[in-house]
Length: 330
Image (cartoon, rainbow, N blue to C red; front, top):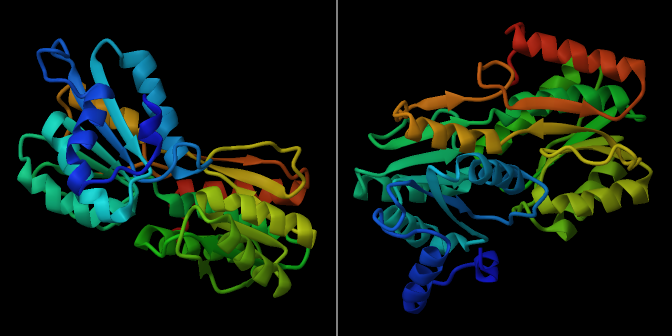
């Protein structure tokens, strides 16, 4: 992939440049592709965000490695919100399957999909109650399940008895995850104090995330849950400065970093792989597909760093309660 794909694509007067970019990334015509399935994956954020986008990109890379003889992949990242629709149109014009990551793309995906009825669309991480369209499927990573586990770990490991959650954009899936975090905290400790969730308006702004985290730590939170991607750098700084902790993820990191109690592992890439394989074997359907602890598709786990037996016990009980249906995340 050329370096230009790591920049937001400008449209309008740059439409021809964008088309050339996608062609360079592998969106050739069917004859040139040798009959391969042409797949375009739309990453609105950074592929190195240590979060949702990077987790999805790991799946993209696995597809390239394992199915490269059957699939021709193209991708674009870091697209400005105002350009989502035109980016999706470009992909739909040159691919058989278009995969969009993040609920922030929902409105634009729903506008573009009907314009290309022969193209399959998949949105990963959209509203949990979204209704599929004739050629649009929704894949739900059920981040709320992962955050329920995060809440249980945070409440048990918090040295103050209080916890808080910092989210990026206030999308339905993120709000549900925040609610699940609080429910997980109270599941593990009935007397846990759960501060009001904060949404900083951006998944990738470390300064805003740090400001929110410092406010929460200052209000007594001992541990934070989060869905902020690149914003985690700010949370880490705030935790170190405050002598407090947080829960990382969705990609597990280094347990030697003392600010982390553990890491949520939400495998967004597994959903990219699922979509491609379904399109290849003709089992793809315009439906809602769930991933996580309560689905047969897996995709959710937790890597615990804290060595406290009480924290491990709380995590195990939360996992069991969720997987058996004894509790709902939110």
